[in-house]
Image 1: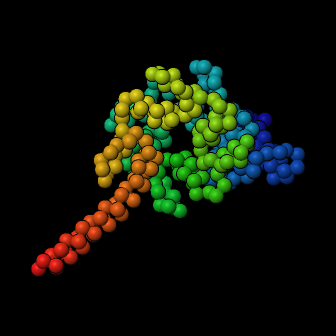
Image 2 (image 1 turned 30 degrees about the vertical axis):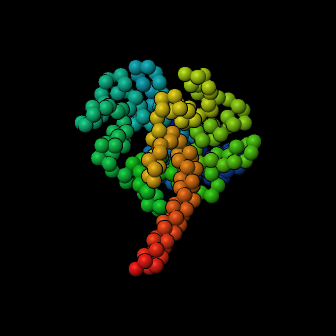
Length: 240
């Protein structure tokens, strides 16, 4: 049997198993219909692990011809180069996505809030913020998170792990953002300024707490101003 005929035979045999779903437990994604037979074959190989295309230089194998072609450029030195910054890519699609960082193009729009993104993966990640149930759950307290990194940082509140250490005082923190806030104490950086009195703070929560003190002061100041104004009017009325 010719290799191509054998591959088609194997593909049909596998598709029959998928259709019956009795003899093989396969992901539901395998039932996705692709536009052409070759694309369908490549799609199925993602799940079967079948790799028919081998690099003659290093013997590394790939499931699609396009993946092998991209890999071969690591041997030949041929790449897709960005004209703006000279950065190189082995995939044309990688260059296409990169160019959007220069021209600001964002073709992927969220239908719920109209926010736009340059990559489909960024839109997919953004969509999790709209879901009522965030995909990443803490197994200890059932708190949900939209990002895996957020869950990782949260888990340190349970384990007590602190990887980020201040070089000046050796104090440790569970997140890099926590360390960065702490460092402002040493270097005197205060990026948050009160618009009413120009007092500055190193952290935004401290500024918000400070602003509450102005609410009462402003009310007392306005009241005192009205009392002085009324008293002045009465004085002039008596001596007019």
